[in-house]
Length: 477
Image (cartoon, rainbow, N blue to C red; front, top):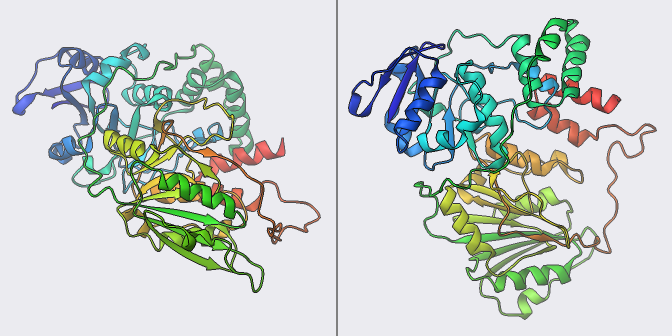
């Protein structure tokens, strides 16, 4: 590993293999880093502020950087480089980063970080100015490549001890410049308007300043030329349990069980939680006992309806190393579980969601990437993490429980990765005959709440105040 030590503007030392020093010219951090990547294409490259050099844990890098498409960095400060104001124009990103765990983010830091030289060589064409502020350079790269296969993380384990550093966030000039180079023009206007509305400031000169910069080229080809073969051991036994919550869909549950029976890699146990709120009702899933199945079926019948409750009951019964969260109206090929395991081993992931098209729907996004979404009916998770999370019943009979569950996983250090293949088809069959529309606390309000309280709960829990205010403006408009 080669370590580039800097004072936030220029490189002051390059530590080579076995602690030797490498000579260099006094240049910007980006210039030195990319020149080293070209000269040493098979090496791991690290950058480190002189303020944390003694705190940098180089011994753990090979374990953390377990495949070739990753960039890890860490900013021990609560505030990120672009500041909270970026939330005014970014509704999609998770800007509230949990600094205690590994966390998916494009907001990379120049304070400390590591990556592979081969990766830098692959994306060097997306760096028009290697002399610019190094944090700006990193975040500009990450935001343009992350959806096409670049894996970016905030990783606190890069430092032996986390200490807050006296650093400043960027100015409004830098913020407007970043928005101009990475968003469409309308977002400049939205940013200007939101700062005026919520901060009572007129960012006229930053707005004019940003107009002198051109939009930057986005990565469209992906990183297909970079081979991924994770050295992280995430599968031991390959045992897997499948959870299937259901209500009024006996025929479709049968089809799901048949698809599972035909798998080239059979599940160890299928946990079915059947709901029927009608008094004196009994199970409709007679085929569970009437037929022979190549796996254990753990069947629970309850009069309490609600997907969150049913999934939590099922999760409490999981005993295998892995869990497949499956809806009762899914359809999939016999190679699904085997194909998912291949992806898990190749990328070293501990939670993934598959593509989930409806019948005759074309899968439009075909790149493996980190994602902010989570599918409660099309996901695979290492079961050890399920002891720390559960579906929040505040979302019962509403929307948003999937995203909330995914965020709970991220906040304990589990990244969720999207894989387009193999996929699961969501049949989206009609509701069962005894289903009724739930009566919520706001069902009879004369003015229906917009957004729905469940979606607002998501924003209150996981977005910063700037994102919340911007969302409020969108709803108003």
